Amino acid sequence: MSDNMGAILDQIKWDPQGLIPAVVQDAVSKDVLMLAYMNRESLERTVATGETWFWSRSRSELWHKGATSGHTQSVREIRYDCDADTLLVQVVPNGPACHTGRRHCFYRQLFPQAEDKATGARTEADAAKHPAATENDRGRTVASQERFGILAQLESLIAEREAERPEGAYTTYLFEKGLDKILKKVGEETAETIIAAKNNDNDELRFEVSDLIFHLLVLLRERKLPLDDIIAELTARHVLKPQGKFR
Image (cartoon, rainbow, N blue to C red; front, side):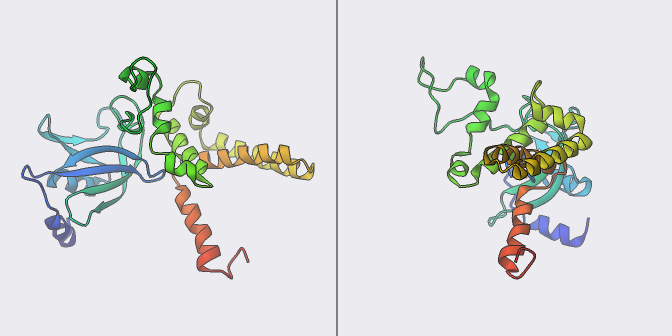
């Protein structure tokens, strides 16, 4: 380990047990996947191997995420907050982060609470029966109020499908078939968009462009390229360089 890295680790404010909470975030969709704890050794191993290592408080031992399940997490970036007492670990997950098989651990909703007719509260059984609905509701209220919030919702849902692979889902089928199948669909939807435009049929064009955008988002997820990077590229071209490519 470099002297610089050692100096950075010396700045970390470990708790009395020598631990620090680590918030694990999907580097592509930006969804929060899990919260775990690291000690100095697990953080050093994370940096050295490029995969997440944690300290298990219940077992009192180091824990390599995905060592038994295969659901490892490739680290893209690690940040620490202004007080140096919390880590933000951005990863590309190789499968679900939660031991339940869900994409992330925050599938139970506390507020705003969706009430059921019998008890007036969301039940554990309801969350188990409808994990996708529970997850889709979580944290998307703000995004849905934005003009293009649906793109963020779709990016998150596609990431969920890639991780959990629910049987019968079309997006699961695309990911299981792989890049060539996804590219074929992008090509097909591009051609159908062109045909719809040539037909002067805006209803058909709206439908085909929607299909094209969806398949492009699937492609971005397959390649682990965040939609944020596309937005940043557009911003750089149009705002930062106003005389650039689109002028």
